[in-house]
Image (cartoon, rainbow, N blue to C red):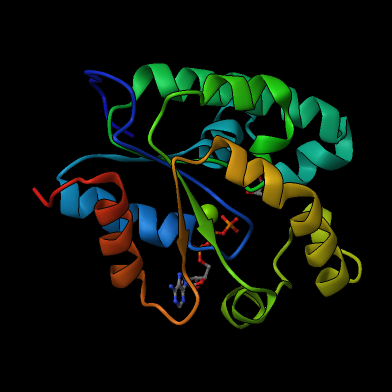
Length: 176
Ligand SMILES: Nc1ncnc2c1ncn2[C@@H]1O[C@H](COP(=O)(O)OP(=O)(O)OP(=O)(O)O)[C@@H](O)[C@H]1O
Ligand SMILES: O=C(O)C1=C[C@@H](O)[C@@H](O)[C@H](O)C1
Ligand SMILES: [Mg+2]
């Protein structure tokens, strides 16, 4: 997390679990000489518990409200690279916050997502029948990721560094 912020984030990454938001986000921050921030981590720090527990104890709708607030605060307080939670774009209010910003949708196929994360991590929305759920999630979310994005970058068969370079290219940014 950066202490001082001089403007909105240089890059905002969205995309499904396994797209590489964290990995590519950190690589991008390094290349740009900027800080890295992740709204999932912000929410966990503020709530003092893991996201999986928030889902179980308070439900998804409550989590999406916490997420909207976290995104609002991060957009106002971070000028580096920002990754959003995989489902942040589901909330109308969160999508509205992203208007006009350098948002990049990191796209990934089910095949590559499975290779990367195995889809067996403690992800509340993928707990049961993860492949089928992932397909359904993407069917619902693809139009929303696309709607908020200034650029769509495919991550299949590309290393995180190659993806980072493609993101810089798409946003016409240069390494520090
Ligand atoms: N382009 C890539 N090629 C190969 N492996 C990758 C690539 N991007 C990320 N990975 C690997 O895939 C896994 C998931 O990546 P990462 O945690 O960055 O995804 P994420 O989008 O942040 O997921 P989450 O939604 O769970 O936060 C990590 O083990 C990472 O090393
Ligand atoms: O895809 C999703 O809906 C989620 C993705 C994660 O980043 C977390 O924000 C949470 O597990 C929900
Ligand atoms: Mg991540």
